[in-house]
Amino acid sequence: MTRPPEIHVVFGTGPLGRAVAASLAGRGHRVRVVNRRGRAGDLPPGVEVAAGDATEADQVRSLTHGAAVVYQCAQPPYTNWPEEFPPLQEGVIEGVAASGARLVIAENLYMYGDTDGRVITEDTPLNPHGRKGRTRARMTEQALAAHQAGKVRIAIGRGSDLFGPHVSGSVVGAEVFQRILDGKPARTIGNPDLPHSYTYTRDFGEALVILGEREQAFGRAWHVPTAEAVTTRRLVGMVAEAAGRAARVQTAGPVMLGLLGLVIRDLRELQELRYEFEKPFVVDSSRFEQAFGMRATPLAEAIRETVVWYTGRSSYSGWSTSNINRGRTRASPMIDL
Image 1 (cartoon, rainbow, N blue to C red):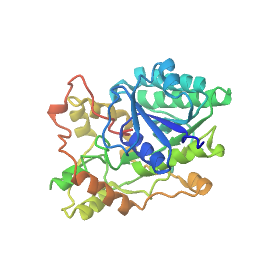
Image 2: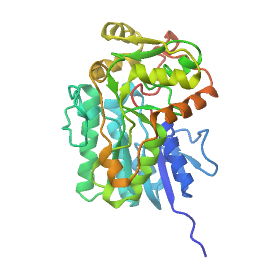
Image 3: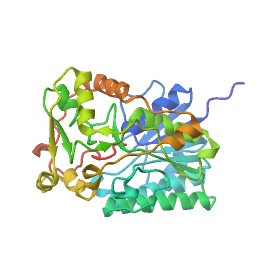
Image 4: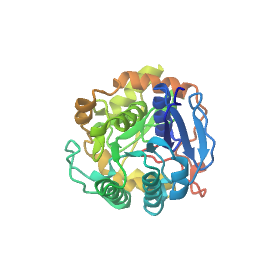
């Protein structure tokens, strides 16, 4: 009798969770995605959706029973990271340890802090700035300590600011793609003429699946394949070219960002991360590329695919007073998992 395909479980159904699920389904794996609601759209046929609370280790253990690999792509509201993110990841680690699966964790780059414009590699020391950076660094250390203690096999994939299908709240999400398509100026943050690395969600998802397949990936963090750094102004120009629109840029400098932050909670949270947009922010992903043979999608191609997705999406209200302090926070403006 033919054995059924092994199951892979993805926590989180944001853009990155969807990208991981699509990559797994494309490999013929049985896939279960988990969020609090137990509902999610725009998933490949056959992907199972389950409800669960990632902070509860017993629920995680039950949901990941018999799984080969678990992918942690879930996150709490951006403003609640220090209080809610560590318990969420701890619940996943404890639950996966009990089920015996391997664990791949998605991270951003906050734990490195201000590198003063130097290229960021996996060997860059952790020097977090602000409460979200310190939260990320602490979670990284705890995850790797769990691996070293033999509790659970863990690999970590790190990406820069995201763009791609389903990404809205990123600094190069709807404020760039949707506004360009609407014939409006793209809204950016900081100095648009500095090089900045942006990670395509589909590359990130594919890379996390590769990490889960390769034994050599475990016990360390990897920078997922990320296309060459370009200035944000150049990226906006490429979006405009792909969309057949004019390339116009509005940028929020330190003063404007501070003023907007007085009324828009997500932008207020960006104050501690201004260094990313006031100095070059360039990520080196060559270690992953050399180890696993995967390279980033060419930037122009990734932008074209994203424009196609945005062309068919619903409207987005953006940084407007309609999104201010409603008791709910939009997806992270820095990494929309």
